Image (cartoon, rainbow, N blue to C red; front, side, top):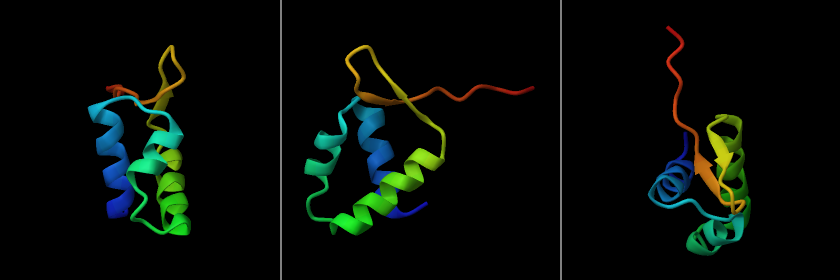
Length: 64
């Protein structure tokens, strides 16, 4: 996973956020690179939404 994707995940873990908030927080990252990292996060299937529509990280389920 790219450093930007890891940073996005860390930001969402710290506080559920809207996509626009995440994009604003990563303005120093070129837009195509940010979108690539966002795609990595989405493909990881770890995103959920809270009652306000903010992205959050879903808890891992043990598959034992």
